[in-house]
Length: 329
Image 1 (cartoon, rainbow, N blue to C red):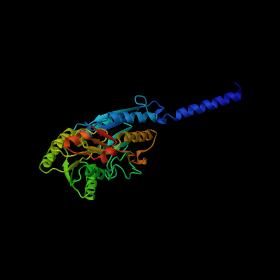
Image 2: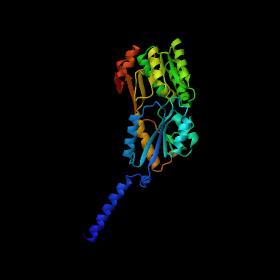
Image 3: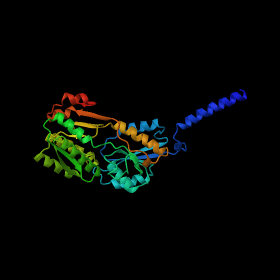
Image 4: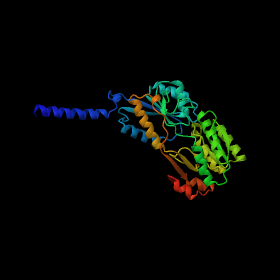
């Protein structure tokens, strides 16, 4: 090989090597394993979205077990040990947290430096987790999964199924600022449809039981949830009672729509966790969370549980079934 040919070969080989190195996260080339800790309510379902998150991280060059690790820490059913769980997580020196808004508030109260990526939030600004959505300005970014239009959308679908819808109940976690925000949005949506919103304030199992005792005496036409660890923890109690009292219940979680839920309308969880993984990738590459805009979901889904409708004696109109992304028997 002549001198000119050698120089050409080395230039091509060097360019190829540089291109390959560019695909590897710069901070991962030192063989360090970056730790993501996901703090969740004890009863939350996470296997499917965990797979999506890990697969998307791999697409960005982060391979679980090689240069990044995902650990899941769960609280007790009532969330009473959340502060202790967060302290345990911090002792493991994570490079990023994944958390729902209410859990992120506790994490943020204990660290102003470790990045926190929201996997769902009602209003990060009002929750004290961001200065603004375009520029959070703190150690927090992520996905604002719910917005003020969602309660109205739930009520519109309910009105199609229940034309005489007048009184809508809502279970509200009195300790959650996010739930209070959702309640305010729901009040406005109810007024727009000529309905009345009746809140049932809960923070533990006893409160939920008392709420259903009230509903038994004076039932609402339908029931909206508020996404909160308390209702996740005691969801079996929730589903049992809405079926017993024959009260249609909606959900903001489309991943699993169990018997007891009439329909779910919310952001696609798979898409949300793809967005979350992309944000974690940017942080691991050196971006500051406070400079990364808090994003909105890009895809919403409607899932109808036909089995619940049958148990409640309801006929779901064809107009709703045709719009559904999935119908569960």
